[in-house]
Image 1: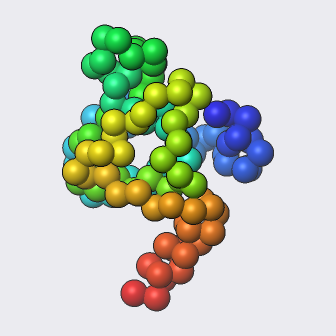
Image 2: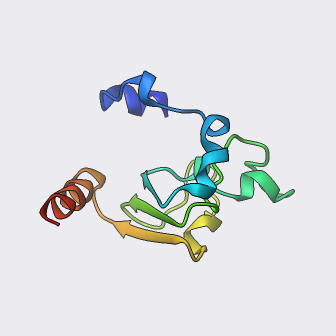
Length: 111
């Protein structure tokens, strides 16, 4: 993941680890997830049979709305379905992340 962030010129000082932000997520209106899969899968926290059990993952079941921008419903590196995608607070936005995020930003600017 860090390689992808570095290639995208994301400054590390703007990033937070899951344990740094989880307490605030219950009071968060919208979380926008770009291309992540296993690191946002709730199974990492509770499914005793999951191959990602105890991996660090964010508590994205708590925000009011989670928008996940991905190309498809394909599984991540672990090869398992992400149960977050079926949660009632999760919306899927399919397509190229850069293009879809650009459209979302432009729509918000026009409001």
